[in-house]
Image 1 (tube, rainbow over the protein chains, first blue to last red):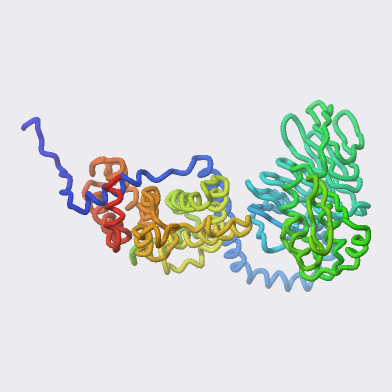
Image 2: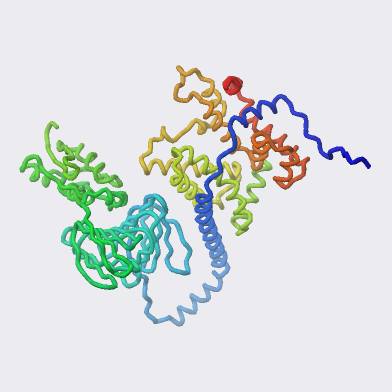
Length: 342
Length: 206
């Protein structure tokens, strides 16, 4: 037997089209493969969504199978009514705005499910909520005020009314300057923050939780002390319970994310002054009138149309176009309102 | 095509029945293609592309029981990805003109016409060599499974039929058959269109 063997397989003859194809494909080069981190992130979420879908489908099947048994059970229940009181789960909040992606889980035994940005969803006590990258969620709390959840965050709405922040950041706005809403408490491993009628943010991070107060006052409890802090303060609670202090302006760019999921302003048939109050509250900028009588006119000017889901400054620009008012941002922190020819 | 759809309908059923292997294989096949589709349209913003593809998979899984096999399963996922991309851009006020690229045109003939159009006629759509490369890659992404991989291994990586056979875990004869079908499919999508010669002329002159 010769040591040189004929190859069992010969390469097929190339035709002219092959050359053209080769030229095109070589010029194009290899297709880019997605980064592993992106692949793993999407695979994890997609797998969770798929498993949840399968379980739901299976439950529907079981439910159909159990329908006959259930009808018997209903009959029995009618004959022997259960007089034990039922405790309905309390609604903690309702979703108001979702940018990007957010998931919820009603309890530890439930599956994660996606929040539909178009549909308000009631969140009961015990619910966990997660936001994805480049995402945010805005909630209207049942007890008043709004809670906004930044990207890559996770919170749990505890049965005792507290909000447990495991990752990321939340922003609370009592919704009015007098703060007439029920107390809320944001809890992290190193601190508890209670509002006293205010706007504030709590963010998990290193070296510890950071609390920023935009308006009003908050009460903070650490391992070492309980103390109040006021608007303009930025505190970092260190692991031992000590606190580092800094300051932050109400119009600092660090607040901008909260505007993306701000509760919508309903300007229809509302005075212009109400829109201006909302813009001030959301942007941290102060409103000034070019002439004293314009403030009075702003109270009497009724707006028509509603700038739902516009950022505050965009809403201001759009709504003022329906009036003879106009505005100018001066000095970065002030909005000057004038009327007539600009 | 009919065979592909028949297989895809069965695949969708397996996924809905809880077959993890079918789900994972489908994910691995579709993810890179959808990711590339989104990435290039989102100005190479990785985070945004990941978000769009993630939403695509979640929406597709939710609706999978409604897949009736009118098109291939990939085409069905691709349509969802396209709609998700449009929604994403709308939410972030990204101008559609910045997002919609020439591969979005439904008729491939138009693409080739755009490639060969004089600059004065369609300056915005005149294809550069980079565009041509992207068009080739997009064509590969739209071919049935394994066709794109086989063509890439053969003509970009320069592997022999035997080496491809080892890589794809099939016999050499099957590779030959696969390559033949892949070449035909690619030509149908690309080479058999009018104006192609102009594009190739430019390519060969580079």
